Length: 484
Image (cartoon, rainbow, N blue to C red; front, side, top):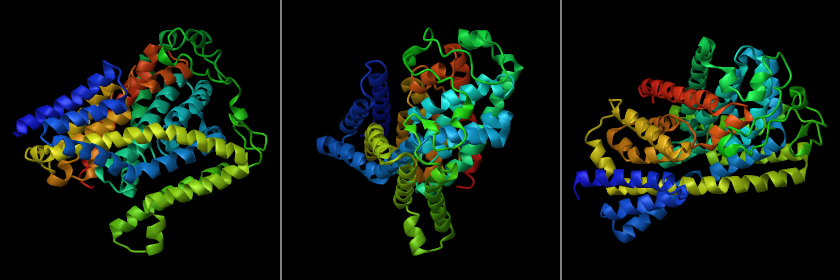
């Protein structure tokens, strides 16, 4: 089959997948499998070869990251049940002060809290951010909303253990320690720079409380403390209008750790320090990072090499979190958290697997050999191309994870041929998938509703804010290609 035919059929397969999801509202998992099947058959793989590519790609990527995703989600579910997020926000407020909270929120959400399932993290953190908004000075609401949006979305696809970052690492064969270190190097400056840019824009008059905040919140006027007056209106809330309104208790209710501190799981049974709650997860991430450093330094320490393996490190973190949270909240609460975590991780695992199916089919169709003739690792063209593909897919589909996985799959076969580091392809795909988070995204509507914004306001804080982060990220990735 000619090179042109393979390229055309690959484009048709990707466009057909997008069309099935957007126009016919077919489940993304089914749509990705259909796209992979079409490409395999039209590329000459035959029935048996096509089925083998689909099932083999599914199994390969789940073998690589399936346990990692499950361990990460379960760890996050227990931390959420223990009230760790509320207490962490209160601690950041004490340490960073009101004016530093947007930056502290963006960095923390984009790094440390990525083990928590994104919708759960958003529903818990958004009401806290909204209560903090009046206390951080001018334009507090848009600054906190933007910081939260940027941190959430960047962390998902760029920072281990974000589910998108894990999927991209597995898809491209990137060692998880390398993905962790490279992601951290990218995420921290990205969220800080993007948040600073948006703060500058808001202070130059780009935010109108009358039109950008929901009526009852804007009518309340500026306040110096406490909580905003009223919850979000459902008049302009979109699909997430039924989301729970932010609770209106003072922030102090979620602050000081005590045996009577309330969480959505009920009272904590014992007083456990915030550092102790997060210690197992932090130890796991440090072990993974240490393994990557030892590998680069070509130092062999068998025991450390074993515990630094991502699966073992996250297992240690999961076991440690289970012990600490069992002490803090009781065995019943932990068991309920684990059950909820398994429900959340199921859809993520299947979606990740079928993303691997499409990527494997593209690889076996020979697209990598074809594109490898036109690109070289000394140019920025491959990274810009994967960024653009991910951005276009995200605009059409509205899913950060799906667009990142699909875009990375297109150029995954190219990386080894031209000598381009796969971690750069993973980061570029993740950065591109952040572009233009808009009304097709559940995150958009949750932020709009829970932060008390109108749709117009959410387009500024979420859509524009995360798009700025996407552009900043690719601007940082390109010079990173000189190092990785």
